[in-house]
Length: 161
Image 1 (cartoon, one colour):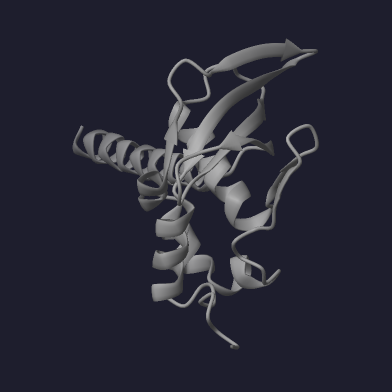
Image 2 (cartoon, helix red, strand yellow):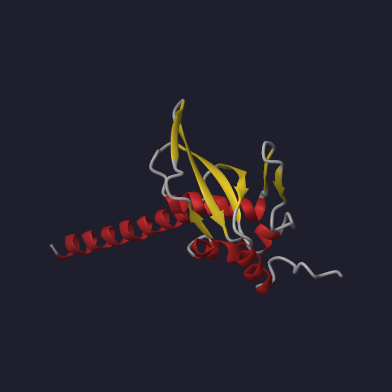
């Protein structure tokens, strides 16, 4: 009887640890996305449209904001109709790997301080067996750049002059 209880406790502990690992891994993942310029925002910000591709339609707004910030950092964006183009804030192609620990922590939560979903802009479209979830997001690029400069991830705008 005692061995049975110990075995149950061990199995429950293992299950809980595996659940935590799976949930942490899910939070670290950036879903496949596209990013485009969506007009002009207030000074110090970008307004972008992010389109996430997912097998499920219930992608959270925070995941969409995360993808928008990831795009501003590492992809940049454009919009031919608006003649809008912006290079990524992080210009080194190795920075994401070089600062992997920083970005792991950043995308686990603090990224939320640098973006906001535009209320009412969410659109979900089913394309074959996947969903395209589109949302307009404001990214506070000046504050983001300032904080990334402070930790050394990006060089200051005045560097080299």
